[in-house]
Length: 174
Image (cartoon, rainbow, N blue to C red):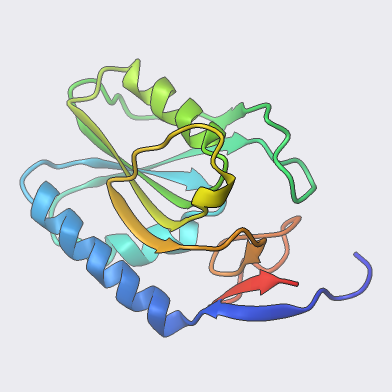
């Protein structure tokens, strides 16, 4: 992989934890009586999703979907592929998509369009980090964690070529 890139901390694990507690409180208020399906977008959302659902004290189902638009670089290819489909039926169910980051918006727009065609009772989006400076298509985020600058970030599930996902904080790659 070559030399180690310089990483500088952007959000500490304490800031991330406080953000997830806030998001969970908002979600509990809206979904406590709806038995939603939470759809995690793999691979990046797994840490966020695990920490989030531990704070939700109502019946829910967990699903994962896997999309690809990056390949091995730091720039999106713009071509979105569905690598892993949902197992559960979402028709007439309340669906909450949980993602680690919204960047250009192309991948999440693809996913939301895909899910909306399955006729859920409701469809909302919860995102840990948002990078609005890179947006190419508008995205309505219902539950927003943290806004990030136009920098490449890693840690807490976010990777660079499968590296750095395991870091407990979020870092900027210099």
